[in-house]
Image (cartoon, rainbow, N blue to C red; front, side, top):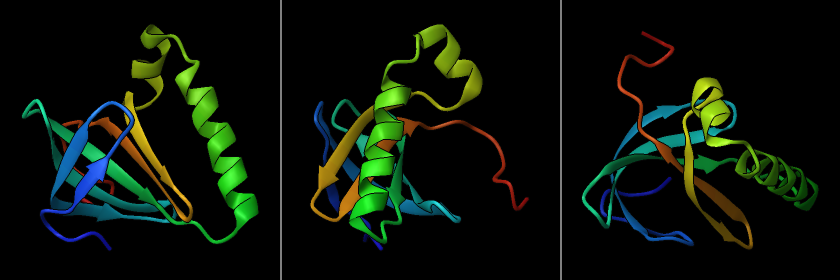
Length: 102
């Protein structure tokens, strides 16, 4: 679990964790502040094996290839990512609204 104030070093910028906003089967989602002061969502994915890391990396590459007009319709836009030896964090557009539990 990431603590408030934790810094994520993405490939395009840095993001500071503000608070946890949800948790599910794929991972934990946090609200974070980007270096340009915009708010984003950080999805800290649950990783259980090296095979799973390969599958997730392949999925991310597919998302990155989506045309922008399609991407926004299907899911929150992928802004950036941080990949470490045992962690993958997706930085995505923070969408307003209720979570699925509400």
